[in-house]
Structure formats: C-alpha cells, structure tokens
Length: 544
Image (cartoon, rainbow, N blue to C red; front, side, top):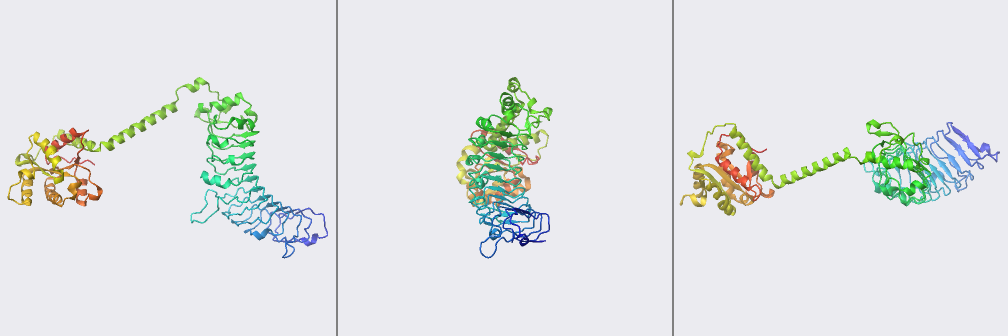
C-alpha cells in the first residue's frame, strides 16, 4: 500500500521501475532520481504522487520521461497535479475514475509529447483548454463514449466547447478518438478539428459517423493515415477526398457502403494510396456497381485493396446475397435494359405530379366542387323516390331574398334575373313591400308568404346590423321547416375578422353555395334552381 523510494537511494542505475498490480495508495518518490520510466498501473492511487523535493520546483525524478498510471482510482486532476515533471514525455492515465477534465491540466508539462486518457466511461465534461499543451504531439482519447455530439446536456450544462477543444495544441500530429460519439452537425465537426492543421494520423473508428463533412480533410495537408472503420457511412460527397496529396492509408471497412463508383474516390488518390480497406461493407450487386468491378479487373487497385476479394460480399439483391463482388460481372447489355427501379421512379414522379395538379384544381375550384356535390346529393335522394310533402303552391312567392344594399347590383342583375327567367316568383323588398307598412312588419309578412328564403352573404352582409336582424328572424323558419327552408349563397368570402358566432354556427350546420364567376358558373345557377324547388321533407344533403 505504501512504497518508500528512499530505500533505493543506494542504486544509481535504475532506469525503469514497475510497481504495478499492487494495492499501492502512497508513493514516496525520493530515491527515484535515475528512473526514466515509472509504471504504477493497477493500483489504488487516488491522486498523482508528489514529485517535488520541496516547495521549490526541484524534481525528485529529473530523468522521468514516461509515467503510466493506468487502472488506478484517480478521480480528479488539477493543473498542480503534474508539478516537477519537467522532462515527462509520455503520460498514460487510462482506466481511472475521472468525470471532469479541468482546464489546463497538462499545460505545465512543457516537454509532454504523448497523452493517453482512455477507457473512462464516466467522463462527461471537458473544460476549455483541458488539452492545452504546446509540445503535445500524440493524443489518445479512446473508448470513453464521450458525447462530442452534445455541447450541452439536457439541463443546459456545458459538456465541452467545440471551438476551444484543441486550441493551443497545434503541435498535434496524431489524434485517436476511437469509440466516442462524433457530432452529426458538419459545422461542429469541422470546428473541432480546425486547429489541427499538422495532423498526419487521424483515427475515428467506431465513432458513430454517418456522414463525413466536406472541406475538413483539405485543412490537413500532411494527413497520411485516416481510419474511419466501423462507422455508419453510406455515401459521401465527391469533394470529401479531393486534393489529398499526402494520404497513403485509408480505412473505410465495416461501414454501410453500398456502391463505389467513379465519383467515390479521385483517380489521383487511388494511384497514390498504399492501402485502401473498404471490406465488410453492404455492397449491392447492381448495375450501379459496374464501374467498380470493371475497374478492379482492368487496373492494379486490387494490390492496395485489403481483404480483396474474400470480404467483399453482396447483400443485395436477394439472389446474389453472400456471393462475392469479384464474381459479379455485369455486361453493357445487362445494364442498358430498362430498369424496374427507373419505372418505379417515373411512376412515383407522375403520381406526385397528378396529385399536385388535383390539389391545385381543388384549391382553385373548391366552390364549384361544393356546388357539384350539393347537386349530386339532391339528385340522388330524388332518384330514391322520396315523396314531396310540401310545395310552393301554398305560398305566394317561391323565394324571399335577404341581402345587403352593397350587394344590390349583383342580386338585381344576376340572381333575380336568373330566377325569374325560369318563372319563379321572387320577393325583394324594393319592389314588393307594402307602402306605409313598417319594414319589420313587411319582412315578417312577406317571409311568411315565401316558400324559401335566400340569404346572400358577404363581408358587407356581416357588417350590417339590419341584415343580422333579418337573419335572426328567418332562423325560426329554419327551426320549423328544416335547413331546406334556407338557401345560403356565399357571394364573396367572409374575412375571419367579420365572422360572428351566429354566422359561423349557421354555416357549420347548413349547406351553402359559393358563387364563382367564370368556370363553374352554369353549375352554380343549376344548383340554385334545384335548391329553390327542393321539398322540405327531403333527407339532408349537407356537405361534410
């Protein structure tokens, strides 16, 4: 549990000291002046040992260049944790119990070249500048499951800052972020790696990457090794791998790649690569794959393809499942025939076009459609043989028209004219009311003499208090004779600001006809005529 290094003062040539797999809690570093490699892994240490001789910066381990504290119980690191390690070049802190990486924890290690903080599943926060170290060249941050795809948690707490993650780490040439969650947002993805223009090795295995952002790799002109194995990549833009003059090793095996075509990789890249691994993907043996299989046969690419042809198998179509890609040999004739997929696409496009046209027609001709449905339902019930139990013969007038003075011209020149041309007797107040009688008495009297009441509705109608009174009056007739006693005509659309509760209720419970000049106008007048002649006791024909 305790190791007293002063016991080794007699030894001046100890270069490597291993105290691993004990239960060490405390280490006295006195006597370790000659040690350059110290292994303290698999112990119970909960903090970094003190390597200072006193309050000054004089080191007890002036030659120490490698420190391995893997699999201990360290819960927190501070900037002061690594004092007096002036010559430390490699630091390993894997499998500890860290939850937060504080700011500038390794900035005092001016000669540090390699840092490994891996296999720490509870690590959830990286403070800005945690990796700040101007001498750092290699960073291994693997199998931590860190959520680089979330800069904040559900409570709004910052987990890390993408723009400051690798600030002041311009010396990094190798970064391994295997088995963490990389961002889905390409802008954040680029922001993380933007400062790392000197990278030569980038390892992003099993990092849940579905798409690789454009323009990122071009900011790394010295990149020679790129590992994207075991991600979820299906396809990528043509520009992703363009102008990568230094890249020699590219690994895309174990993804969801279906097709490799002439736009997948620039020819210059294929000529300069030493290794390309795209095995263990979900290849389609269709004509879209023809370019790749032909290129494999006609070029030397098979020399750089790892695991070719053994682990290049088809998963689609079903009849070629598990067969090797090398055995798929489509001819020009096979791939020039009409494709069923193309047929499906054309059918879908034409169907969408027709649906769009129908929707446009419905929006532009909805008034005519309503009127046509109204006419159809009236005719349908007539054909079923319903007996007329009431008629206009017991009334003086066939119809009484309620309208606003502002709509007078249309009522007189269009509606009245059309109805009287087919020998219907129509009552209008300016012509038929008794002189000397009050308006209210005239309305009450002549509504009672009329078989049907036609209400011409518009914005002007809703703004008129007199029209509202007339509408309330005829509601009694509707209650006694049913909704066939009223014929509602929407002469123009009513703005929502003018819509009253009573009018809205009336429109919701009573079928109404909508006037539209031009196309469908003849249908409108035909429906009006049938509506006036329709008996009270016919079944309802409301349009839902």
